Image 1 (cartoon, rainbow, N blue to C red):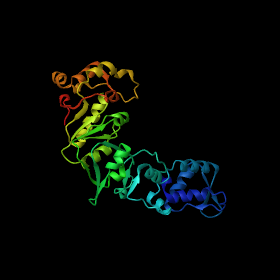
Image 2 (image 1 turned 180 degrees about the vertical axis):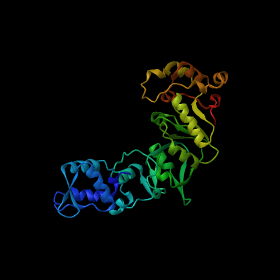
Image 3 (image 1 turned 135 degrees about the horizontal axis):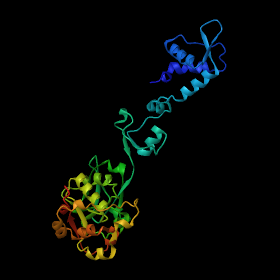
Image 4 (image 1 turned 90 degrees about the vertical axis):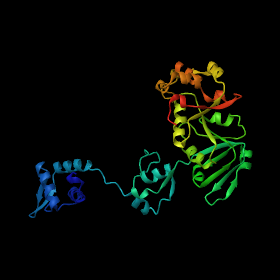
Length: 330
């Protein structure tokens, strides 16, 4: 810690630098004596009058100005700052709002809780999760009251649940048997929904709301992921399965070979920032098993190609495909 980080030394420097201070300053305190030695070493002070008072020379002014410029101002107590403005933080706050209030910048890099006293503060991104189903659906709040959403779903074609509303639910009433998370918006809205199915829009790796909603549904329903057939799409399915503690399953047409012939494209043709990454061939643990159980995936990997999910939505027959053949832990 520098001598100039001391508040009392900074006060002494301010008095010495005061152009209206013609009488000089005493430097007989402990901190003053240390400052006096530093200034004398650079010819920075001169005695004033008959007492033990000193004033700065031009060299001293230059020296102090340079030292004080290097001092890092102390971090303000953010809680005291908010209190001085008459504000207190609520229990739940939008993430951008919090960083604007706390750091003065809503786009401040996201990091861990900046203050232990804020550990109970819930920060939200306030996104929505979109749901499609043909079955009756009701929301059950924490008080056990049911709210029928069937009419809303029929009118709008889907139900959008805000993140904060999702946190108030105890359960979701639904009588279907298959939950499908869908990676891309076009596939989510255009997929020809069948009875017994419930679609959740989980864009890319942004699956946090889907992981909160699925446990609220009745137990026993099957789950599978419908995404692009590339390495990233497979990774998303595996990560979701791990978080949900379910077998890693893909929801895809029964017959994929015709689509591979018409629509498969090389991964290497895309820009590096497109999100497309090369296949990790090390995931092909058992080549024979891959060819027997996931022949289309084996072919895509072998050719370094991928398939967009949107080209599949008009396929007539669908099924679940297990990713066990890839050796993924389920």
